[in-house]
Image 1 (cartoon, rainbow, N blue to C red):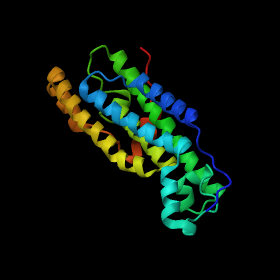
Image 2: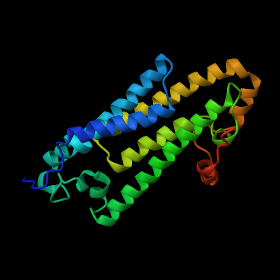
Image 3: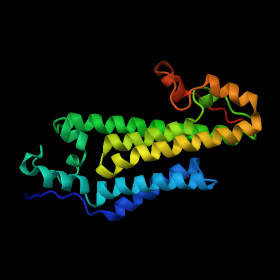
Image 4: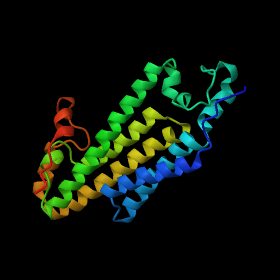
Length: 220
């Protein structure tokens, strides 16, 4: 197969995007212990795998075209548009591309909003138990934000590596949340247990998502 529009090999762009998203994430989730650094390492590896294929070398597309040959459902698979595998799967139209990009952008914005709001509340609390704002809807809103970020990337640019790594990243942060709950329970006791019993861990009911994402955080 010949491909006239090869939109990859941009390793500087790949490195820039890894650094950019890692910078913003670390601005709101600074690892403090061994387990947190381990999970941030998993998230960093996820970003590297994502952007290395998005801008560097499209391993997944290369393998798929190698396996499927002329049966691969686009004429120019190594153009950047058709690196979006959901776009390929659903027909390759500009409308589908716009829908994929739009949905992933919404999830990215929502994810960073939750990271920011959770960080603001924790740092403004000065040691008190936080159970209002975004924490009134879920116990771990920053991890919800991280889950939305990674889901956005899976929707925008799924690859063999990121699809395999995604559940590992999610599991890592679920395990970390349990470790953090034990630590906070030692400080706040029954009050925190009561909070955990009445509050979902990561995802509020569908009817509460609008309020969850748009809740205002006091600067005081």
